[in-house]
Length: 287
Image (cartoon, rainbow, N blue to C red; front, side, top):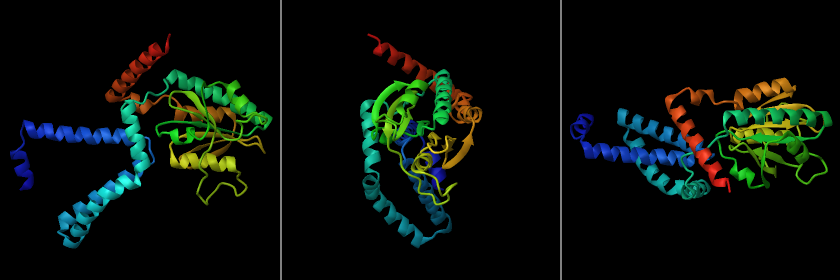
């Protein structure tokens, strides 16, 4: 009956009201996109909606009373729990980059893959340990801030210089951001909390590579200082003992052209808009 009443009273003002509310939540989702809080918020929302539906369908009064009081508590607790994420989201809103997050174009990604593979091959031959993180969708700003800012183009020679054992930047990770530039070097990454490690002898470098892949969707190429072996981590999993051809194949599969997004009409519109933004940014940088 309530549904029929809602449709009977649906007019232009109600449609505008619904559109504004939907737009608000859509904007909030963009603000939290790329943060670790997004998965937790999504899980909490799904659990609460599921319990509310269960309480309504089965007329469970006790569960309904708990949920009504729980929502009130969450309204106070969420701003406290997610204070760092809310602060960063508001900073992004103030900078005006909360909707569009320009990604490196496909041609640049192909160049980045080739440069990373060349660097990994040389590093493996010389047995120089390395951590190279490639950002995808999740934000890595928290980890970029822990290192030395570079904002350099991705070049095999620069990566080899960063991880030369006698330099000050070799102990840490080099992070390639979504613009396709080396944002920082000597960055600190979180260590994995998993007890099911591929090897008990796994060192700190490999544990950090697994750790960053567990908390973000970033790819991490790791070169062992002891063995000279190359590995890559993604989604909390590690593929080790890679030759350069296999490394290139994996990077092309997970970091190459974003085929799924580009195959949709919305994806093409977003990609064109991002291309316009990149061209405007390049014109602004020109003297």
